[in-house]
Image (cartoon, rainbow, N blue to C red; front, side, top):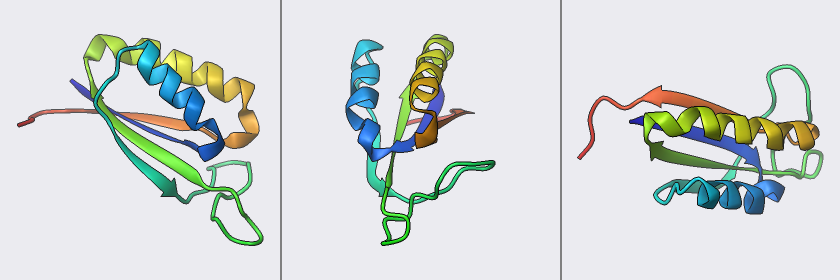
Amino acid sequence: MKALFISYNQALTDRINNLLDEHEVRGFTRWALTEGRGTHNGEPHYGTHAWPSMNSSVLAIVEDEKIPVLLEALREIDLLTEQQGSRAFVWDITAMM
């Protein structure tokens, strides 16, 4: 199993929800409001007057074989919405209860 963490502009929530549904990722935890800024470029997402946009983040535990397909689908969303600054990270899950 893998942990998939996705951070994205909250304007993309419907697209992320659809992606999770299409790939049968049922269980996840969402943080509706998260702040951040990109490593290299893009505007900060701080929810302030100067930087009003906000991110949302999702953490899902998924089967190993789904990760490449999910990452590719997320890359496609990111390419279409490059200024939004979506990111995804994957960790190994060594134990669960």
